[in-house]
Amino acid sequence: MAAVLSKLFTSLGGVYENEGKRQEMLSAACAVGVAACFGAPVGGVLFSIEATTAYFAVRNYWRGFFAAVAGAVIFRLLAVWFTDDGCVFQSR
Image 1: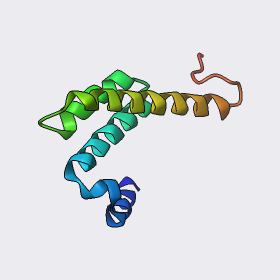
Image 2: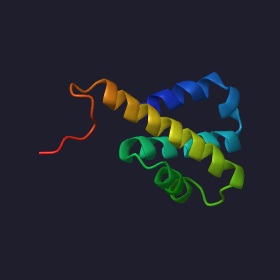
Image 3: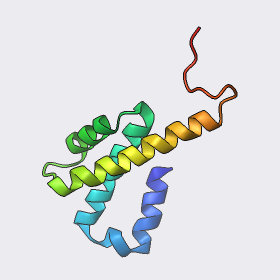
Image 4: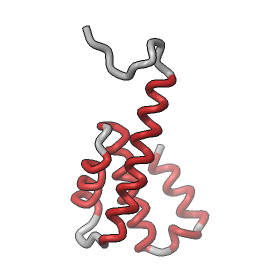
């Protein structure tokens, strides 16, 4: 799904015409995905640094971190809102 959306937005132009901006968007998206899956924004940023680039500008740390925090918070809120008992984790 993400690959199809990426191809669609690439054909539209704008931000994706610049290779540097496209790389920044990819690293931020990677950070958000890991942060949402595991609930760890810092881990998402560190993974995006490791997996996406050989050179990572310091300004991208903060962009990736804020995007990852927003993704993790939204994911957690949606999980709480759409469970029956109001908690994310259940103990047995």
